[in-house]
Length: 206
Image (tube, rainbow, N blue to C red; front, side, top):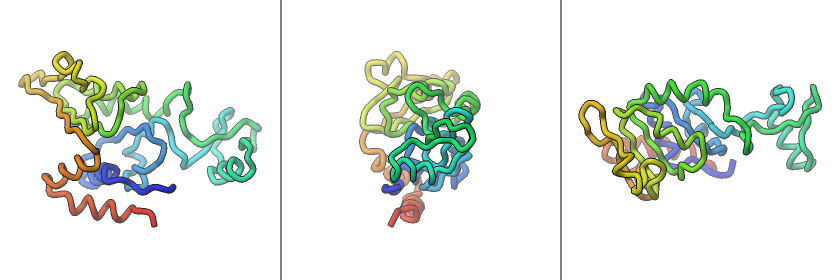
């Protein structure tokens, strides 16, 4: 690990600390959410992670340390000690299915969510890019991003902008710009800025 968690990563951890986080879904494989303090129970790492490794043939767990050593030092593909199949870190390669945990929880979580926050994404890679459209119409959606994406986009704005079935109130909010700056602004409004900074400082590398 060469990078420290950002303010945005720390914000997710802060939400969990305050008992407000149902789940966080990420397509990143850098594990920075976990380093920031988000528990693995609250995480859905849709494209996997580098904490563990397994055999691609028999699915037996293997040492990630040994896996890394063989790849980096010996310049060869690790093999399973049981079936001699190839071992790889538990990341999702192109064409592979997402982890079972994603399929197990996605419908339950999107049904239960009372607020959806989308941050720093192009919403181009499926099936994760469909998550914002799976929450019910009474669930507010907030996008912190440099640009409008997915069903938040301007070309779909009038057609796709969702309203509450109960009050016809618009339920989409877009805050354009850098995610860390947007999160810091939000936390300042909430009175959480000091907590956010302290949490981020405690997880910085070096």
